[in-house]
Amino acid sequence: MHYSASRVKQDYGATGVLYDLGSVYEGLSKITDKRKARGKLYRLETILMIIVLAKLSGEDKPSGIAEWGKHHGKEIVELMRLKKSQMPSLNTYRRMMADVACQAEVERMVGKYNQQGEHGEVYALDGKAVRGMRKKDDEEWREYMLSVYDVEQRKVLSQVEVGRKENEITKAPKALECVEISQKVVTGDAMHTQKALSAQIVRQGGDYIFPVKENQLNLYKNIQQLFAPEYPKAGFGKIETDFLTVEKVNKGHGRLEKRTLTTSEMLNSYSTWPGLAQVYRLERQFQWWRSGRCYRTSCEVEFGITSLSRKKITPDRLLCFRRKHWGIEIGLHYRRDVTFKEDATRMTIGNTGKVMASINNLVIALIHQANFHNAAQARRWFAAHLSEAFALLTTPFS
Image (tube, rainbow, N blue to C red; front, side):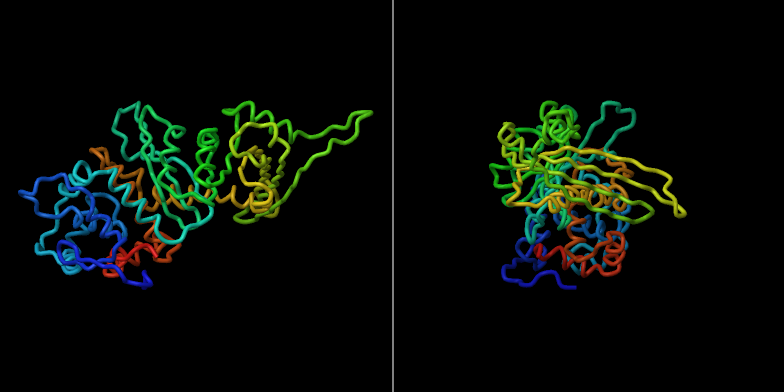
């Protein structure tokens, strides 16, 4: 398996490992080690590399990572050119993630690495609760990580912590500050429909597509009224509109979904929303079928705004971009919860849960870089090909 087209700039690690500049290995070697030199048996990047290799191979719990390291000790010593044949203990891994490895530096390293290589058109903004960090009987627990996710390339470009007394509204601008969003489209949920965030996205050269709900009541009512059904009145002619409409139908798994998107520019001169170019009404009609008969139906209506003008985007493409937002649920949140068992793994000590969440983001990007679409299949393959996993960590994002 080939990961990088060229090996121009290289260097040697402290143990003699040859790596490419811009690789995961280089990034991990630059994370600050808070320990004193005396009594240090393992370098921090060595321990972090073993953790990432174990995660690529299918281990999720610290105990599983420690056991995996012992079972593959001989290969790890050879690949990483270690002098000690003894692998770190479970307590060493726990201590490294809890308070030795700086979580902010780990997150910056993952973001910097993932911002290499190709990028898609749509960046989804969404938060996820890290339930594995919850301590028993902590009723006030609230730990979220807000991510900027490249939907097409399946990688997290930025992630920030949302603390107990914070929310995504105040953290979203920080998450986008360190990401190049010029000529990209940022999507989010109704919580992110804020004037300040919209203005920031436009200033950074990007565009936005946001749903509008009652948290922006005046804007919501104006869009709702604009798209309200027209009832003819005696003596009055038909009201002229600029509506453009597109319909899409998808079938699969016993469900039929019909999506109808209508756009308008009629509020542009009226609204003071930063960068507003169009408003839209999206109707989703669902039918569930079994044995040739429809047994259930539902309908959802969403109103929204975008800074993309009709010169930049057609209604058909706008509908496609809006749907891509939900790629973060399947491509990131589902994988972290189900494949990587993030919520089921108890990590309540120090920064363990946050560090592991950042490493999960890294591993998901690495799996996509290796051209796997199924994360579970990829982890089984890497478990049987450790040298390939190591090669992936010593080359830059291609």
